[in-house]
Image 1 (cartoon, rainbow, N blue to C red):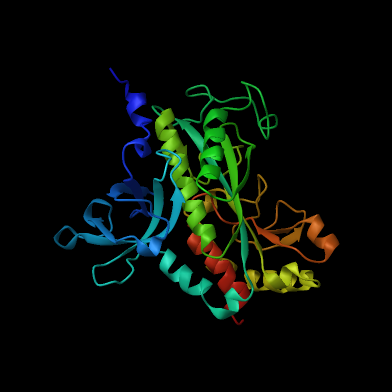
Image 2: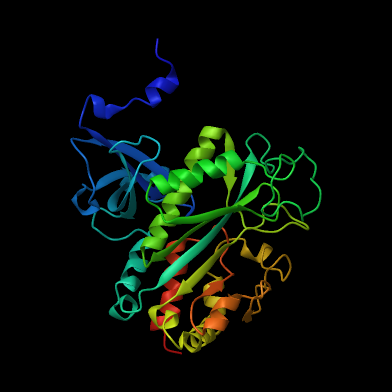
Length: 356
């Protein structure tokens, strides 16, 4: 008699050429990921050749019950680390039957910005540092924390090792390898300042692909925590008090910034970001006011400032960039629950297209 694990790990390529494509989309909250699968006769590698599909938008808070059909447009394909073989994950965005993007489809407007000739010419690169917190399923309290109580104060947990400092490393490492399998440009992981909190980095990625890769990396993380019986939280301040919040620091550069003399270009871009500070903050994630307090390595939400190697600034420039006179900067304002399509395209729009 086969065990459930045997059936889950069946190698379908031994008996059929059929492949499974898992269509992924963002639900009505703007953070909930949904997915469903369908079968194809053979391998698929080009999203433009995949058929559109529909789903019940009234069950995802994206359409009324009397006109509930929402259409999925395949946009990016990734090898599936769960089913493996020729099976794929497909990142989609969402439209009405008439072909209009629905309000929660932030990818559509981002793609327009990234296809602007002035943006294309500058080859915007992004590196996103996604922080998250692992929670015990039944009590929604951080993994490794005593139920109803608190661990020792922050200090030993950042990049820490040991059973009393690092909680959930098996999940983190499984996610790291699964993302590499999927072709996501995940560049690293580390334990964070608050126990039970971790970070992974995606990038450098160019333009719209940064959003696609981060959303699929989040999807893979949600699936792995589902298997492990753990909850992942992207709340920017999951525990009140003297504990670090969770952000999604966004590193950014353009061709002009990476070329000789790029530091002057960086400073002009930062000046533009300062002029639109409130505009960016409004789009950088819900609940961010609980995180951006001026404490715990943040700038106050109402204040814009930048500095070299200053982790209490809105924008941080690295020492290496200052020394080389070119490079990149880090926008430290985005919350962990930000939409990468919104944040990456807004940074490009402000620095490359907006005229003060």
